[in-house]
Image 1 (cartoon, rainbow, N blue to C red):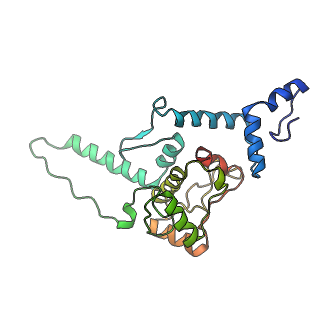
Image 2: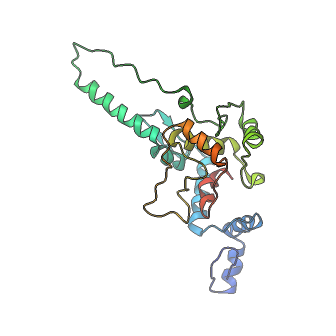
Image 3: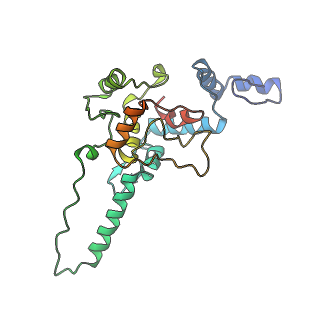
Length: 235
């Protein structure tokens, strides 16, 4: 039996081999920082994701044609596909394609100007975007320092974090594209997630979700059991 990995092993020889494996070593490191173990399948997915990041040329980048964006990981791409901003862009893109195909070539008229949104809603997700106010930092480190001192926001296991800009950009995508509260919105990997549970909090604008997080003291990252898998690419 391996208590660290939570599995039963048939023999002493098998157990000795298991203790030399990368999977067991990874779970030992997680145990040292009070994180639960990951399964063999989850560890294999983490290894594959790490190899894709190390060799980006070998892994095709997911691309959203209507939005004109490419993503470094499939998780970020899937999160984008579920966002309200993406769905609105797809509807506009499809209408534009239909209009272009039906327009008489001899009487082409310019399309109507796009509706002007609030300036705050036109933010592009990046590591310099403050998650809780309109402040724009110069880089990821100064942005995180601002959010710590001004909003009391902190990231778990900071000593093991290897990609601060990537993690802040990913959180900014959830905020700007989905209007997700970082505390209320459940992780897709949460062990407490119900099959019919809504993954998005339903806020109508960036300003409203920011006001909610500040008013309710939700300037923090929800880390329910299983949620650490969502951020494993950055640790």
